[in-house]
Structures are given as C-alpha cells and as structure tokens.
Image (cartoon, rainbow, N blue to C red; front, side):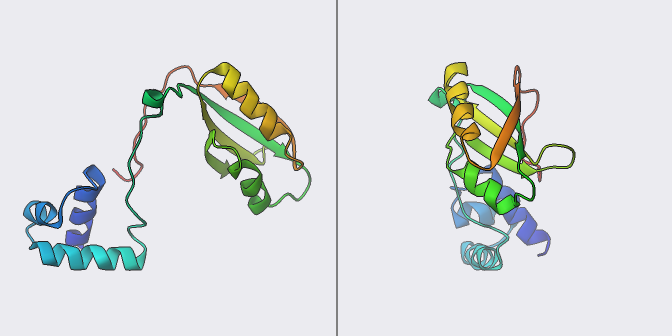
Length: 146
C-alpha cells in the first residue's frame, strides 16, 4: 500500500459514496486508475466493504452501557462471540485482560430495554454473571485510524 492508496482510503472514509471521479480529483488520479486501486484494495482485504453509518440516537437508541461478562472455566472466545452475537443490543464485544472474560458495548432504547437485554444475555448458558456501567455522556467517539 502506497501513499496514493492511503489517500484514496482517506477520501472513501470521509464519504464512501464518492464517485471514482470525485476521489480521483482529490488524489490526482483518473477515475479508472482509482477504480483499479479500489478493486485491488478490496481484493487484498484493506477495504472490507462500504456501509452507512447510522446515528443510533436518531433511531431512538440513546442508552449505552459497558458490560463485563464472566463465564465458566475455559469458555473460548468463539463461544462467547456466539452467545452475545444473538443480541442486537450488543454493538461490540471484546476479550479483555483482568477478571472479566469479555467486555460488551450495548446500546438500547432506554433503561428498561437495556435491562431486558441484560437479562437475555445473562440467560446464556456459558455466562455466569455480568457487571454493568451505564454511560452518562459520550465524551469522544472516533474512528481509530483517523
């Protein structure tokens, strides 16, 4: 990946709907050259896809929490992923160091919806207990590569 590829990615990260011509104007390439590079970046896996970034609050999901998950002995990350992937409120899940086996980021409509989601997650057979922290204010949210 060279500096032109990085410039193309930067433009697409700001506006994934930009045409090849628009991207080319910004990076100094023809539309066909941009297309070839984007195709290669996709084939190489540097660009995984294109998506609409939706403001969850605009959809009415304004309550967030981080939830530590504690599982039974030797519960694999794959099993934890399977357990939590069934719940649409889980927007991210991570294995972590420390006492917890995983850390979940949940988004819900309100505290009642959050409580219902937590109860469903706690009913998963591999999950023994959880510990939650409700988000009061999101101070910073950004793409880690910007």
